[in-house]
Amino acid sequence: MTRKSRRLILIGAGLGVLALAAGLILTALNDTIVFFRTPTEVAQQQIAPGARLRLGGLVEPGSVAKSGASVRFAVTDGNSKVTVAYTGLLPDLFREGQGVVAEGVLQSDGTVKADSVLAKHDERYMPREVADALKKSGHWKEGEEGGPVPPATKTPGPQSSAVPSAASPARSTP
Image 1 (cartoon, one colour):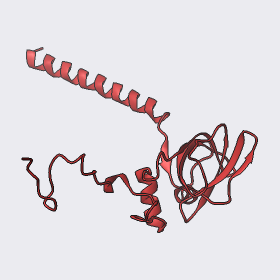
Image 2 (cartoon, one colour):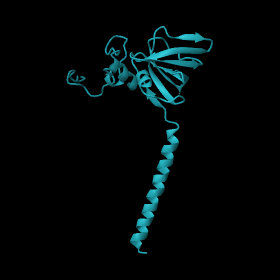
Image 3 (cartoon, one colour):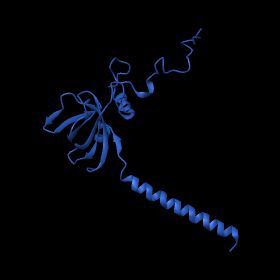
Image 4 (tube, one colour):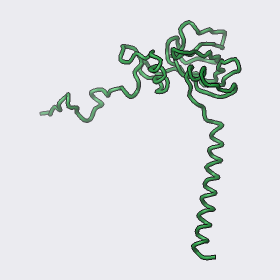
């Protein structure tokens, strides 16, 4: 065997081991990946019961029903709605008409049994996927006072801008 053929065998074996390791890693991650879905996607796609998912949208007004530590509410994107059942403490910012992301397991009756519920952290932030889904359904009111504004459209304040813009000429200090 020549040096060249031994080198090719060694490189081929190394690439095979690397491919095997990548395949094992991807297989292990496949069990822990949780996909984000909107209520319309859950209604249209045939998602198998028992699948983990993140459901995002707005809490439908009038749908919150509390019973002790358990709560049931509907998440909507304007087209469809999915009922969520959750046991535990809700975030302080959780209320009807506000953005929410519920992570849990899809049940056979179409409800999501959530193990965590996340509410938006201020009046101007919403996850990009939820904002995109609300824009598609026509429920996004961009620029309204108190309405959600996507993170990409936020403009820096005058003190956070290091480079002056063409609209505001730089002032020199005496």
